[in-house]
Amino acid sequence: MRYHSDIPDVEIENVELTKKGDIILTVVSTVEGTHCHKCGREISKPYGHGKMIKLRHLSILGMNVYIHIRPVRYQCTSCAGKPVTTQILNWYNPRSPHTKAYDNHILLEMVNSTVEDVSIKEDLGYEAVMGSLYRHIDTEVNWDGIKRLDVIGL
Image (cartoon, rainbow, N blue to C red; front, side, top):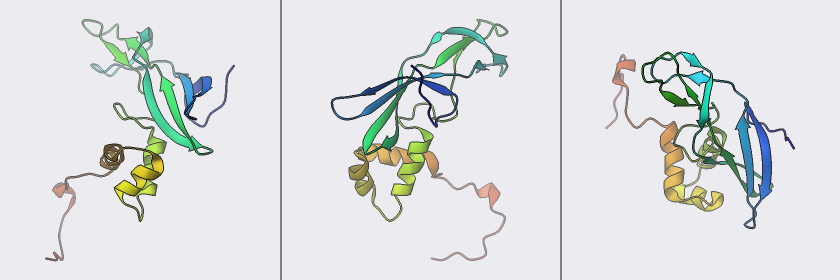
């Protein structure tokens, strides 16, 4: 059975409601191919799947939603050694435990709230909230982009 979702480039393969009341959406990519991480060429020769990724997504009716995806891996036939590249879809960042939409939701929850408030409201650890914050906010100044400082307050 196939379900429709607002997440681009995937089809929902399975929907599961856990005993904890969480919703787990198992999805598969509908995008064919990716770019080789070495040469940058478009590659489309499938080479299995990567490990299952579990991503927190926006809640539905007060229930936590998790997306499970096994990203497709592709082999480059042009490069020496025929390296394999894992497909990354544009709605999540590699090594992030959240979808981009959920990270944006956390940022909105931070308005007029503390990290601890958001941690409690979203049932997340303190470090998970800080991780979302750090993924969106530069912690260093790019001085090359600043031509002139008119006023410096001390």
